[in-house]
Image 1 (cartoon, rainbow, N blue to C red):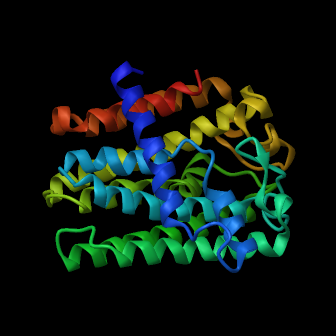
Image 2 (image 1 turned 45 degrees about the horizontal axis):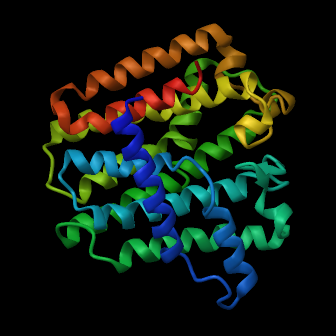
Image 3 (image 1 turned 90 degrees about the vertical axis):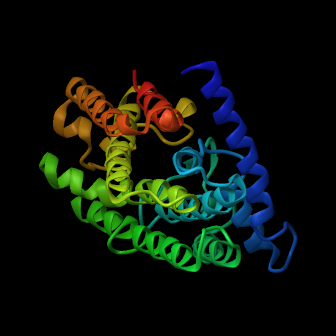
Length: 297
C-alpha cells in the first residue's frame, strides 16, 4: 500500500465518520434508545470498504465528492443494518462486532431489530432527499440499484442461502453463488452508485467496472474466510473460528487454506485486468483491491 493511497483511505474514512454522524438521527432525539442504537451500530469502527469503493469509482466518472458522501452514507447504513441483523441470535448469534459488544448485547434484541430496520429506512431517506445525480433518471436508478442489491435478489437472498447451507456440503460454484448475493451485491452497488454520481460511462466501461466489482466482492469474502482461520478475535474485532464451529461452508473448508489464498490472488489479477482501460483514473480502485487482498497474507 502506497503512502499516497494510505493517506487517501484515511481521509475518506475520517470524512465518512463525520458525514455519517450528520446523516443519522442526532443522539438523544426521541426515541433516544433507538437512535442511540443506530449510531452505535454505524459509528466508531469498521473499514468503510463500501464508502471507499464509492469514492474510488466516483473518481473514474469525475463525480463531485459531496454527492459521493451521501451515496456512501446510504450504502454504509445498509451494510451496518445487515451486520446488526446478522449478529442476532436467530442468525449467527454473535456477541462481538468491531471489537465491542454487538448491538443486541449492548442494548437488547428488540432494539437491535428495530435499529436495523430504521437504518435501512434512513439509507433510503438520505439517498432520495438529496440531489446526488446528474438528473432525476440517474437518481431513480440509484434507488433501484440499492434496493435490488439489498433485497431477496441480493444481500437478503444471500443470507437465506447461507442459513440453508449450514451443515451441508456445497460445491465451489454453489458457494460462489451465495457470496455473489450475500457479500458481493452491495459491493457491486457501491461501484455502480459511485459512477452514477458523475459523468455517464459507456456500456462497455460500465461492464468493465461491474466485472471488477464482482471480482472484488468475491475476493473480500475469500479473504474473510482466510482471516477467520488465521487470526484471533482481538485482531479481527469479531469472533474468530465461528464459521467452522457453526459448520458453515467457506472457501477454506471447501478448497483448503493454500488453495483459498491462490483463489484470492486469481481474483485480484482478474479485477486489476478489468481496470486496464481506465488508466490512472482507476488508481484508487486498483489499490483498494490490493489492500483487500493483503489482509490475508
